Image (cartoon, rainbow, N blue to C red; front, side, top):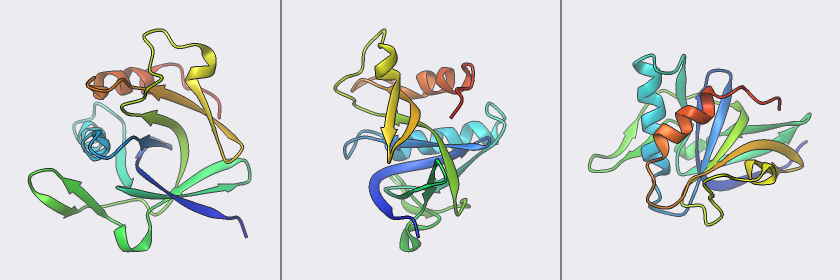
Amino acid sequence: MPESSTVHASAVLVGARAVLIRGPSGSGKSRLALALIAAGETKLLPFARLVADDRVALEACHGRLLARPPARLAGLVEVRGLGIQQMRYEAVAVVGSVVDLAAADAQRLPSPSGRQIVIDAIPLPRLAVASGENPMPLVMAFLRAKEPVC
């Protein structure tokens, strides 16, 4: 049976693949997850649904990285100012890309190696967002760019 690990992150299924959102506490992971879900509801994205917030269980399986919510957090998301809210969620999704918030290595023109990360031996496209930068426009451009093969 493949081994899974739990990481401090959020994940949102956008279309057929999940976006894994990482970053330090307070960097806006939940806020970005909610913004992506709202973009799906308003049709700025074809589909977006929560996979997990705060903690994400990751598992490498047959060359793909799977994301799941830990059982006790399934369907829960933190909404700043409102507290913990319940919402519909996907029980499992294949991770297609990674967004790192408040990334120390964020660059205006990143090198090809800075646009990819390897998690559990699986290469994934990566977007590094600098601290204090609004990630949503960057993430929307990243998602609309030519879809990378994973």
